[in-house]
Amino acid sequence: MEGALSILSKEKQQDGPLLRVEGLSKFYGGRIGCADVSFDLWPGEVLGIVGESGSGKSTLLSCLAGHLSPDRGEVIYAGRDTVTMPEPERRMLGRTDWAFVHQNPRDGLRMGVSAGGNVGERLMAVGARNYGAIRETASDWLGRVEISPGRIDDRPRQFSGGMQQRLQIARNLVTGPKLVFMDEPTGGLDVSVQARLLDLLRGLVRDMGLAVIIVTHDLAVARLLAHRLMVMKDGRVIEAGLTDQVLDDPQAAYTQLLVSSVLQV
Amino acid sequence: MTDQAYNFAYLDEQTKRMIRRAILKGIAVPGYQVPFASREMPMPYGWGTGGVQVTAACLTPEDVLKVIDQGADDTTNAVSIRAFFARTAGVATTEATAQASVIQTRHRIPEAPLTEGQILVYQVPIPEPLRFLEPRESETRRMHALEDYGLMHVKLYEDIARHGEIATAYAYPVKVEGRYVMDPSPIPKFDNPKLGGMAAIQLFGAGREQRIYALPPYTRVVSLDFEDHPFVASKADHACDLCGSEVSYLDEVITDDRGSRMFCCSDTDYCAGRRDAGHRGRLSPEEVA
Ligand SMILES: Nc1ncnc2c1ncn2[C@@H]1O[C@H](COP(=O)(O)OP(=O)(O)OP(=O)(O)O)[C@@H](O)[C@H]1O
Ligand SMILES: [Mg+2]
Image (cartoon, rainbow over all chains, first blue to last red):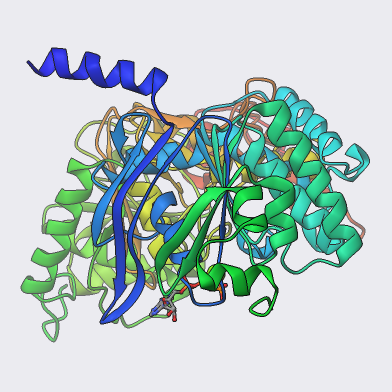
């Protein structure tokens, strides 16, 4: 029985969604963080989460990525429930299959460690023990995020905001994750810097076939990157669908306001 | 002659029992840092109060105690701690490594191989090998618990990137029994190979940081490194100028105000033993034979 079940779930894992979320809720005392969120995410798919400030986007993302433990619901990744799995396994996922790009590069980088060390950390965490090979991979990844490999020994402090964000992306993608969580990755950047970062992200997502869940205030960012959108209000998903559909023909009154930019920050 | 104002070895019996429990736990889980309620000792922290408390908890009236600081029995620190236990525990003391049953040390492992039945107690200033990379205690604890040690190699990576080689010369991190990463206290990395497979019990005490950890006899201890930058237990490329030893760890000593230097064994007992046995170094007086 057990065996038959595990074979079934293996098959599901291959043809089913990469991530299946069921009834996910998180409360801060009496206040709702996010409530009753359900969705599927397929390999290679980019899901945008939009909504005004305080609508629960970051809470949801943290629950999905295992940084916060939800009060209710399931998060099934490749057939395994990441809410109930032991912490070591979840951490292992966090440094192999998953990646997390923070809004503030300071939260996602080690500011006292060189660019090469930052990129190499995930490799070393999963057992890479050849200095030359680690360095070569790091230098290759710096190139891929348009940082001159000549800066490999510089600290992130010596980088501009845009470079720091690109370094954070390289550090996250170096182990070839399948699923990337991003919380306002273009948040603190100038418009021109944002545009370049978005182009870069779009290219990487396509080339690596990444599934992405991206939280953003910015509907232009959502339009450019996301295949599908979820609109959140007061912790709940009030509208979901293909990006163009949601943005061009919003159903919920709240989404209509959001799109007409009345609610945009 | 025991000073009757104190309990045997200064600490009260209950405190010693508490410390022994921490030691036993440390021995049961090699390399794991066991918290303990460190006591005030009548000496400053820099003097190795962690090691002193561990020694106090281990001593019996029959023990023979040796205390070394940087390999030497005759420095202020070593002399004071030896005197402290001679007075509060009335135990015999020695400078001969082979005759000691308990050896408290700061910054060295004796050159002479230790044997079963001996206990080597290290004074540890900072027990957490991840501290300089991750200042949050809650996070380093979780990293140990989950064996999340990528960061340790980041430190070595940074060393090589900056200096062309692993420049860490003291407190070189090790992995114990394939499980815990441990700081071996500030011994030179030359001593690292002696940590593994040692016949004696090794106990580590950090007073200020309130941690005890241990290596039971014959524990597997591996110095962290990279395949293409392997660990090397290096020492000054000289022979001892007093006893001629080419294999012992050497101190460099300035001998006059014109910058003349000499190299001599940091392990004073080892060096004296060799000289007594007739070995001679570059600066040994010719006429004495
Ligand atoms: N640590 C916390 N403790 C208590 N309440 C919290 C905490 N974090 C978030 N909340 C509350 O949960 C709700 C959702 O917050 P969340 O940070 O998820 O929103 P958000 O959509 O990411 O907002 P923003 O766009 O401003 O980042 C808000 O009401 C917020 O005040
Ligand atoms: Mg947020």
